[in-house]
Length: 132
Image 1 (cartoon, rainbow, N blue to C red):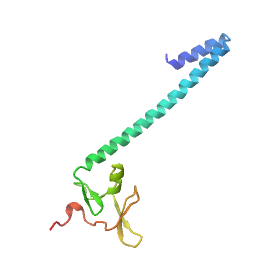
Image 2 (cartoon, helix red, strand yellow):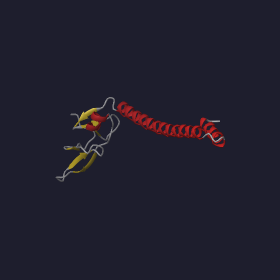
Image 3 (cartoon, rainbow, N blue to C red):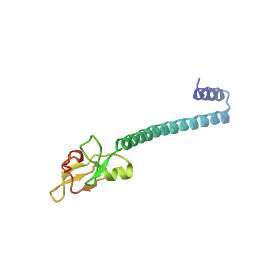
Image 4 (cartoon, rainbow, N blue to C red):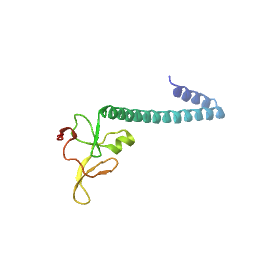
């Protein structure tokens, strides 16, 4: 039998015994316990959400080990697509930079997260560039 069930039973007994002040006190306790349980549940959900976000950040940081910065983007080993250096500096998160048509008609890099535009966007992977 849970605490809530015990309070319900106590409230029923007190009401039947016509002990109204005690009955109301039990109902108040029941109400407060319900509110606390709801708040506790919401906090548990928030903790799960924050834990998942933290794990994602840790994965991104681990992935970025040995990364190189070139042409204003971040290059990670074994990945030919560049990442936004701004997002990694500020949030320690990895977001691919997309190649789009710029406002002046040329091709630029665009981060969908922070909306940064990167001019002189590289057309070749850092790892496949000519190093002569």
